[in-house]
Length: 388
Ligand code: NAD
Ligand code: MG
Image (cartoon, rainbow, N blue to C red; front, side, top):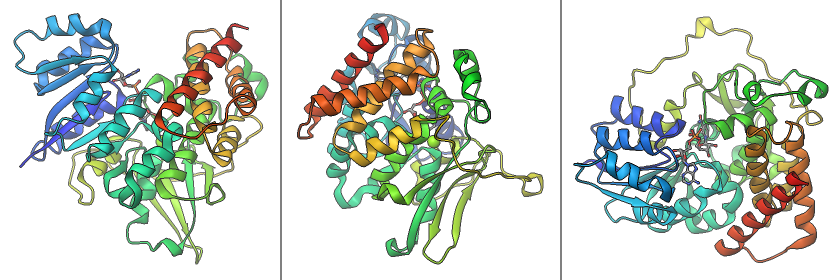
């Protein structure tokens, strides 16, 4: 019997690639049961007409009437608002949820899907950064059977770890392309425009993660993501710049062996693996031609020019809700940069100031309400800092 699949954030980069994987490779295994989008109502309406899901959610209320009108004749149910996402993922008919919304908006639906016993393919790294402790507590021991990483680096590590005994793992190495400004001086980075920052050298992705890649915050978020997914202390999570984005990450074993996963820079592969795990399936996607591979480079990140990485390690090591603050401040700063309100180098400065303000201000026990309150607080503080 086909499994019922829900894609949260279906209109985004990961969402659309998931639909492509299902159409091209997994049509016999999965039925598109539910789709969601936020403000891209028109694209969602197109997807509804094409895939005819049982349910769809437009999480931005303002888009509801438009989507409803555009999908007249569709026999499914259209829900609206953030609560619609919770209703969709907890539907008893749903088997698997691809969590691919962007930002902390993914916390509640990801947690709700896990609480309802669903298998979750996780692209939304921000939910693990902001609420990792809660999410992992929900999963306890079964973690990587039910929460499968989609992020390419974590998928690579997850794949390498299959059949490796826990005691044999020394550390992991997350690769990073370095983004478009890998070789720029701080002075040059001062004048970076949103257009330049959105031109990623190796990956085509949504706007927020593309800016995160340019500041290296994406790698910082991924360090925290790896800490929770693989249960590793921060000292055992390393970052290496690898501009070619061919080696998606590596694990290092106690005897000095390095195991890596290689592939083209195509997210459809980790998406497919998350959906077929523990099995694999042939696909028609492009492959690496080993004869064409040359000059793969690896070098250490420059944390002086890219302070976001250190901020993320510091937040992760401090624990508590500091990663929640880091994540929320980063989201606010990135959107302010994209709107032309702050310069590129202000992003890490704002995050650091929000983190410092938090240490003085709040220190509470972590439950979902606290996490959401801290997220809110950090956004407000960051917005205040931005408007001076
Ligand atoms: P995107 O901006 O292309 O798409 C985001 C999706 O989320 C859209 O469908 C949008 O409608 C929806 N959305 C936006 N705001 C929302 C809100 N407030 N509530 C509910 N839904 C909302 O983003 P993307 O590049 O597909 O990234 C999605 C997630 O996957 C991010 O967490 C990102 O870090 C992660 N990720 C992406 C890639 C990639 O290649 N794109 C790779 C690894 C991880
Ligand atoms: Mg990644």
